[in-house]
Image (cartoon, one colour):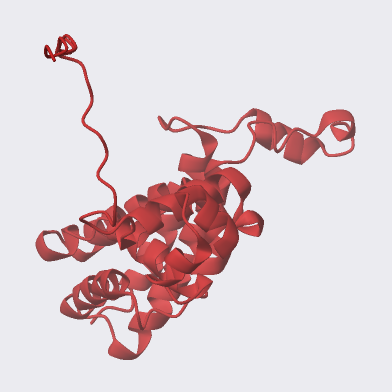
Length: 229
């Protein structure tokens, strides 16, 4: 019997994509950096109230069981987020600058980082630091700077907490609406406050929140500086 003619070869396509291999991927789909980024995305979109492990798994497009292979609880995720954000705070001035300049640099950096993540402040402000190495590294740098400057050891933690309380509150102020102090129809009955708002001096800063932060920070630095040996 004569051989049947073979089918013509399919022309090679330059843009043909290789077929996806069947089976387990060569590398893990999830890691701590990816979980942290997804958590920040979710909280930025839905607020802390919308942050659940189930919602985080959906954001990552994985099953909750896969997520729990990497983190044991919601608290573990928050510690990752805390450590990531704290690592963005600049503490380098404590190694090279005088104490007052170092505190100033650290505080402005701290406020700027958390002004972009205000939904997390109420959680992170009371989150223990035992499992957060980058957060502990920040506190170590700051406390070492205070100690070298002759600050009483028994007052260092209290000073840091006082500064943080001011910094976190100021981070909220950055996101406040421009007309937050508009007296509106009550202007006539609040003449002193209304006049103070109208004549507020920006002192070269871009927004009133910066003026208030600078004023408060300088007052705290001056008061704390008086405690140095």
